[in-house]
Amino acid sequence: GQWIDNIPGFGGVKLKVRGAGNADARRLRAKLVAEMPPSDKPRNVLTDEAAERLTVAILSQAIVVDWQGLENEDGTPMLFSAEKAAEILANPDLALFRDAVNYAAEIVGTEAAAAAADIAKN
Image (tube, rainbow, N blue to C red; front, side, top):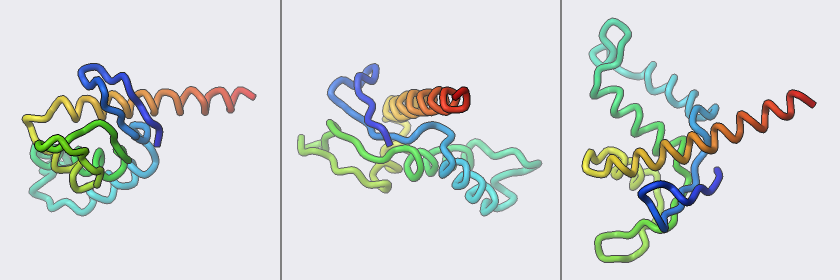
């Protein structure tokens, strides 16, 4: 993972994330979709609820690695765990956090793709 700060709307918060679309995220997505019951994917299209659960699982298990600057309601530092990340990412009232995670993951993913392209040129 890579630390990303200066996230719009999240001053003082740093997120350590892996790039969007990393290999672990792709494998996890394939595994979770394969395990879904047919009712979650009628006509091979995920229901909105299934897509939401899938997004939360991928972001919390294969994208977010750590954070700094998030606090509990009592002002103490919030310790990172995949379970806590899933809880926050699933909360519709905290959609801005999901946006921040996606923003950071896109930055890391774009930088990784550019680095791979540079290596391929050499």
